[in-house]
Each structure stands twice: as C-alpha cells, then as structure tokens.
Amino acid sequence: RKEVEQDPGPFNVPEGATVAFNCTYSNSASQSFFWYRQDCRKEPKLLMSVYSSGNEDGRFTAQLNRASQYISLLIRDSKLSDSATYLCVVNMNDYKLSFGAGTTVTVRA
Amino acid sequence: EAGVTQFPSHSVIEKGQTVTLRCDPISGHDNLYWYRRVMGKEIKFLLHFVKESKQDESGMPNNRFLAERTGGTYSTLKVQPAELEDSGVYFCASSQDLAWETQYFGPGTRLLVL
Image (cartoon, rainbow over all chains, first blue to last red; front, side, top):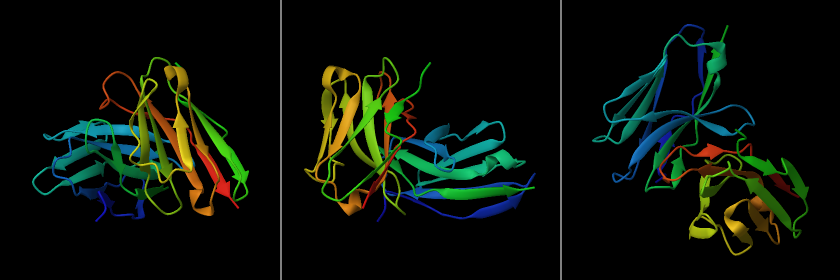
C-alpha cells in the first residue's frame, strides 16, 4: 500500500467554480501534513500546511481527519492560475516527506 | 534571497556513464534533502543531510548512488554507472533549523539515461 494516495483527476472546472479533492495516508503516526503545488516542469512549492482544526488561506481550505487518515483541499472561486498539480504531502517523522502522486486541476475560461 | 539551485537542469547520458548532480541550498540552511521522481511515480525521498552529516540515506536505491556534502554547503549526487531506470527528475530541497519546517525545493535536474 502506498504511503499517500490521491485521486489523480484530472479535475476540469470552469472559472469561478469550487473544486475539492482528498488524499489518504497509511501511517497513523504521521506528524504533519501539507499541500504542495507543482506547475508543469517546475518544482513543488508549499501551498499550505494542514492543521487538525482545519485552516484557510484565501480561497483555499484544508481539512485533516486523523481518525479516517485523510486530508482534503477545497479551492473556491477557481482562477485560471490555479491550474496545476496539487501534491498531498505527509511528514512521517521529523524530516522525511512522503508525496502523493498528485491531483491535476485544470481551470478553463 | 536566492532559492535552492540545481545544476545541470538537464542531463542526457548513455547507460554505463557517470553523472554528477549538484545542489546549492538556501544560505544558512543546515538541512538538505534529495528526492527523485521517476516517470509516472510519486516523488520519493532519497536522503537527508544535516550540515555535512548523512542523517538518513534509507531512500537511496542502491550503491550506484553516492551523495556528499563536504563542508556542509552544497551537495553532489553521483550516479555511477547510470542505468536506464535512473531516468527521472532529481529534486533537492533545504530547510533551516528544525527539520519539520517548510522544505524549499530546487527546480530539479532532469536526467535521461539512454
């Protein structure tokens, strides 16, 4: 079983729409959780950390469910610039990041 | 502030040859990581340095891979001899004092072994 599993998508949505997707992780001892964004042929960049209480950053909302071991990301009022691959990332200990394969989101005009 | 830099950006070599990848972390970052993404797979951890010391190299695929970080500044990752399955994108990342802080990634080196 993979350490982090994501719905690969693609999610193809019109501008202004809301899109949401999840990932699940296998290790219940995981410590910290992140969503990274990766544009085509670029490096991953941190989008946001995910906290147990859930957190928002502008149009982005992340949720963590430790009991079910899943993490979600919701994007409201999608912009063309949100088109990217979103990587679910879990920190199994204090330094080693485990990545999901990514969820592709395409926002169309 | 300069980000993580990697050199070269692309490398095309033949099976059996040697390639050396270089990573310059963000200045002052003691923690340096190597990750790899092979075609169609997720990004995988290779190893972690704290300054010049290897903390964890459990992700290194085999003994054809050798990473060094002499002086605790830049790091090199050598593949010798390269095999076809080594093709992929090699990312370097760095973080400051606490290892669970945000890891900043470099642009990656795209390696193609023919």
